[in-house]
Image (cartoon, rainbow, N blue to C red; front, side, top):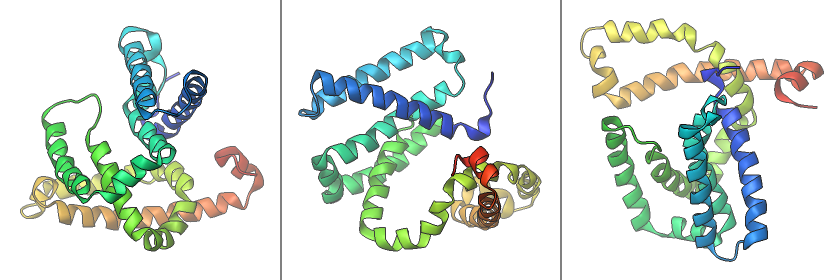
Length: 227
């Protein structure tokens, strides 16, 4: 049984949910959630054990296990954010923390390019930035993205079948003369706009395919676990 790189997210999320359910039950029995530092210390201990298991035992052979341990800290951070109101208040009320997170996001992004870190620090700082943005513009963002959000699973499942056909387009851009030849490294804004123009049609096609599948009871159950 091997891995299929296009669909690592769902198995990694499943591992994280099962692990956190077990850890949560253990925390309730040991000390509850009265002291946040005990919660943090216990999670660090569990994460250390899981990392050790990957490098020193046969756990490395489990499909998507590496994706799971790389992203588990971000999953836990989300759990803490909903569990401890003071953490949420601190993240949303401190302009200094927001500004520092923006700066450290780009610093860690450069650091990530230069060194191979076991955990992408950009994720932690990016979470702080996006949480603040969603808190400030949540209603507007929610209204505009709610339709896409309802089809997020369908988009995730179907998009892989459409992306390979776009590889020649990327190769074409890389072969062009300046200024197109400088797009990958020198003009990130233009590159993001091009990516958006490519992504929007793919999202629309995935949503249409999702609606088609939803009209079939058995296909919906088989592909998405719907009823």
